[in-house]
Image (cartoon, rainbow, N blue to C red; front, top):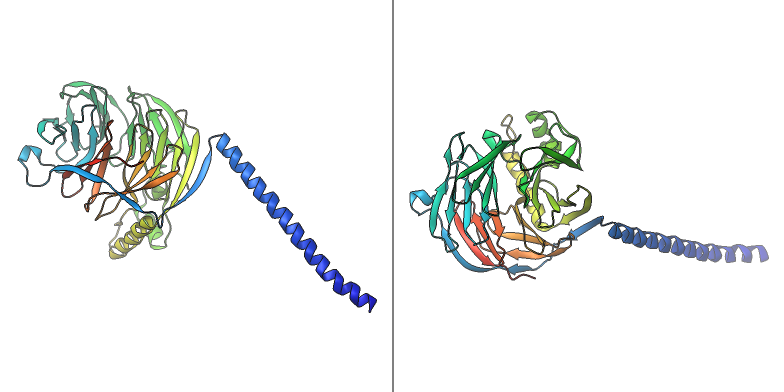
Length: 376
């Protein structure tokens, strides 16, 4: 009986010891996790998972809209690909197929057209992005494989050659430095950085997946069919630079973005878990099922249409939504701040003025919308 009693007592003792051991280990792991998190934050290296499934949307107040399809021919957009604002609130629309820039006053009054198709000074061939830097307009003139610099009246200033690809993510900073997404195409880095004379300054960022030498259309199509993400999708970025020179690189086909210092050090990686992303992915699968039997044909995966930053350095991420305007807002440190909702229109581009006005461009309606940005 004594032996039996000892065996019976031994079992609860083992159980208690196991529970205490598990508690100590768990508590130790939790402390390590907290210490590690504190260390990461002290080194300005942050990894965050942002869940926005039930995030309420803040409605933007529409101030005015103008443009559209029923306008005089000189104001009509063919393929508008970028939108910029100057310090006076004037609006510049870059038109890729018209190979020009259309300029409007802040109230929507048409001012002028800058540029035309060609390869000479002040002429464009499939321009893709632009930025207003001081009193100059920087334009990525892709098919001429150069950056052109004009004054705001439209007069040509200078240009420099660069290996530009139409449709690639790229952005200028306040000095005219160009940040170009490599996509991993014949490059082991994510972003190439060129000064305002075309000299390579730096290459930054680690690739997701592998670099590639050419676009294998058959392989890409087969990977999509299997539910795999091709390497050419994994490193497809939109880029924007804030007033401090920090670089935001938002993946178009993955649910995350990265932030880099001006020197190229990765400061943050933010993963996004949101229902809108899942809806976009389901639509991507449906579209590719429709062209499954069409050789060398596939649809790309694009979660994000455009980016903007405000004067506080907050990041605005415009989703690729075909029927409504949805923007995610993140702090400069990468923390989720909220979701903005505007008009029921597919918005392709956004820009924010220094006085807190958000402008948006309708992809197919060609309306230009102006909203009061009072979100905090």
